[in-house]
Structures are given as structure tokens and as C-alpha cells.
Image (cartoon, one colour):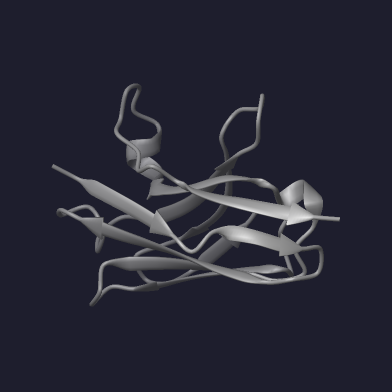
Length: 118
């Protein structure tokens, strides 16, 4: 049973920073490419950043240069450092492996709310 627990969200002013954490249990973490996703009200859940098991990152253009994804395989944890936050970054943030995220009905964590005020 895979469990994903996201934390670190909150309310910040535009230009501020937050650091999200995702603790993963089970066997998926160390061999999987992990991703941070976000879902704004009324919108679909989108991938914003991913990191391979070897540590190679990729970013959506909307967050490139502002967000940094990292992982600690010893702790089965993936992080998302978010700087220069904008109101349009407001969403619930989730993590998952990219493979599992494509499976219909796959389990997700509860997510962590990020709210950026203008």
C-alpha cells in the first residue's frame, strides 16, 4: 500500500516562498520519477515539476526559474522549494510518481493547500 503525505503549504503574500515536502511509503519512491502536481479550483490537476530517481529535474514553463524540486532517497521524501510566488500559483499541491499518476483511480495523498495573496 503506497502512502503519500504532503505538507508545508500555507498562506503567503506574492513574492514569498514556501517549501513543500512529500513523504512516500512503499516501494515506489527510490526507483520512480516523482512529480509535484497542482490543482486549482475548477481546473484539472497538472504536473509542475518532476525529478528522476537519479535526480534530474524538469519543470513546467510556468514555474521554471522559481521552483526547485529535489529528493532525499534515504528519507523517501521529495521537496518543492517555491520562490517568487504569484497568485496564480494558488492551488492544492500533490505529489505522486509519474507512472502511478497515469493509472485511473490511483490513490493520491490529501495534498497541501498553497494560497498566494496579491
